[in-house]
Image 1: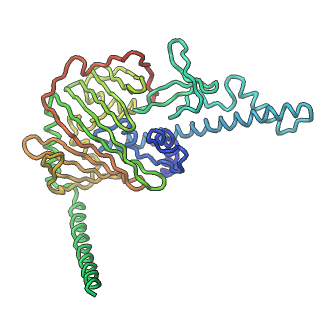
Image 2: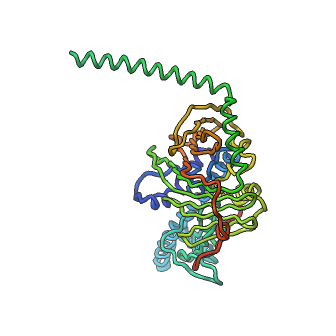
Image 3: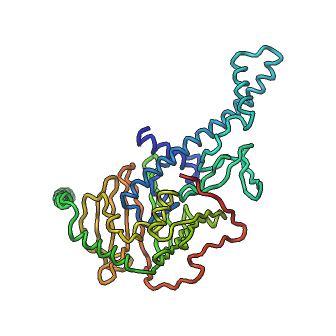
Length: 167
Length: 253
């Protein structure tokens, strides 16, 4: 992936939380390209002016690009959930009629995924910078988790930033 | 008619000024291409040496951070901070602002990062000196400790690492304090520092320009107050979670 690609990916990851924080409508088309020191917002160095600083910036970009990927997978998960809901309806109908090969394949995939986790759930260990909508706090053995449609997240610091790790 | 003549004169004057400005710029550019001006090095070294010799101090800061929207529009966020340092192994840094409400505490044994607003904190064992702790925080936890680079005893070498050009811009007044204004260039970033003149050459302002992002956003810190003889008490470098705070982990790097 090129640097530009990373920056853009980076942008997507940060856009929503930042816009919320900034009081800007999240519906606004503007997607934020955050400068590395933005994490400095969250972790303001008195001066990142050093070779170490440059290395740090590079790291940040990579990290956030990764969390973008997981966010994308979370988005895919939502889409997949919707699709599977549709697929269930379709398969109910299909049972009365004759199921098409495509529908069977979709159902098979869905059953496979549903074995342990909700269909399309992000992988355990994935890191996201914002929780999906509709999460509820749940405490298990004294540890607080966020239950987001059956997928559990736990808050953690990634560098100076608060993130959520898929359990 | 008079108006037209006036406009022409104004236009001619503008051209002259533009040429003058270009000439000045090219002179500055020539000066820069000569590397780092010895005087710039000297002023910076005096400042980092002075700070390294201070055993206890606090710095109150005002921080600005620009972000760039996809449209190219820049938005600025503000925060204020207080850094308390006691060499060789204590630090507390607090920041509050638009995007952040964070406390960083290092007591010589462990470091704690806390977001009081969100009622969360994380704590890990840390090395025994400020410099080692800062290295640890940066390389193992990806934490940028506020006030980081300047605290190192070898801050001068760290700051100039990778710098290709440096000049003394001139004199300036920051927060009512007369300063020398220095400007440096390094790959991917430009930075400027304003250093107090006189017997206490403290850094008063730093601006970092990120060159490898569109519209070159800037990050700035102005020190609104230095205290070189602060009063610290038992709680300054101690972290005790408030009631209801949840302990979380650091994501391993």
